[in-house]
Image (cartoon, rainbow, N blue to C red; front, side, top):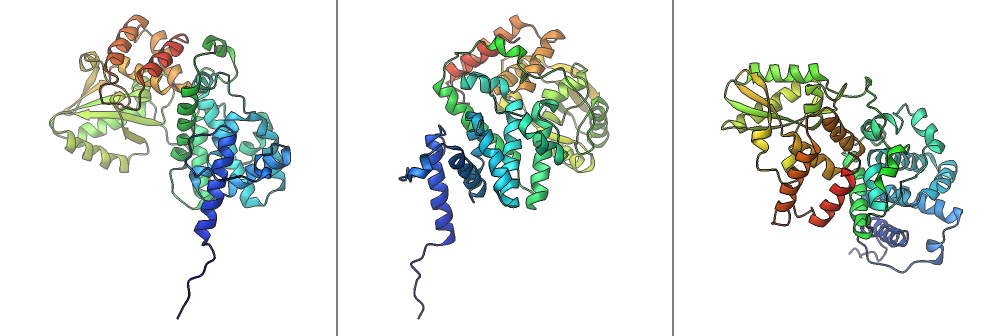
Length: 393
C-alpha cells in the first residue's frame, strides 16, 4: 500500500517562488500582479547591486511567464537596474542569461514603440538605456530599437524566441500585455505633469519614416496591397464591401512611404461571411499578413463614418473603401504608440483630415463613452489622453 508523500510537488515549489517574486515586485512599484502578499526575507527587499542582480536572475528563471515577463515593467520603471542586468548576463549560466537577453531586448523595443504614451503615464521620459545593450541585438542580427520605433524589432525578437524555445507561441502579445498593465497602472496614478511638447526633440521620438526591406520580415507595399485586392476580385463573385484600415490605407493612398507590416481590413455587406472565407483562403496563398480589424474594435465610431469613408474602386464585385480617416486617427490616438501618432501627423500634414474636424469627431466619440460598451475606456482618461496628444499635432 503506497503512502502519500508530504514533500511539496515541483509545481508547488514553482508557485511559491512566483508568489514571492510578486510580493517583491510590489515593493518595486509593480501592483498589477495578483499574489498572496507573503512575508519576505530581508534579502528580498535589499536593493544593492548584488541583490538587484539576484532579482533579475530569479525572474528569468521563473516558470510562470506572466511573472517572468514582469521584468519588462520592472526595467521600464527602474532604468537604474541596467547595471544589475549586465552583472546577471556576465555571471549566469547560458540558459538564464539568454532569457535575460530576451526580456531586456523586449523592454528596449517596447520603450521605443510606446515612448510617447509612457512619458504621459510615468510623468517623465522613459530612459532605460540602449547603448549598454547594443551588443545584444547586434550579435543576434536583430533590428536596433530605433528601427521603425521598435515594432519590427519586436517581431524579429519573437521569431528569435520561438526558434530558441522551440515553441510557436505569441510571445509578442505576452510582452505587450506587460506594458498595457503598466500603462494602466501608472495612468491611474499620474496626472498630466509633463509638457508633452518637450518630448518632440527627445531621442525617443520617431524620426522620419525609415523604410527598408528586411528579408526576415513579411511586409506589404502599395503594389502588394493592390495585388491582394485584384486577386480577391478575381476569386470572389458576390457583391461585398471591403474597408482598408490603418497602415494599409495610408500606404495604399501613398501618404505613408514604403511598407506596412499588416493589411488591416474590415468587410461588410450581405455576403460578409463568404467574403471572410475567401480572404482566409488568400491568406494561405499570399506572402503577406492580412488582419480583420476596425477602429470600432477600440473606440465608438462617429455616426458619419460610413459617409466619410473614401471610395477606392471596384475589384470584381467588391467595392473597396478607405475607412473613415477620422475614426482611424482617433483609434490611433487612443492607442498612442509612436507610430500611431506619426500616422496621425501625416494625415494632417497631407490634409487628409483637419484638426477642427478631428476635434468634432472626438467630441462625438467622447459623448458615446460610459454607456456600457468599451468598458476599458475611462472617459476622463480618454479626454486627458486626447488633449495631451493633440498638442503634438
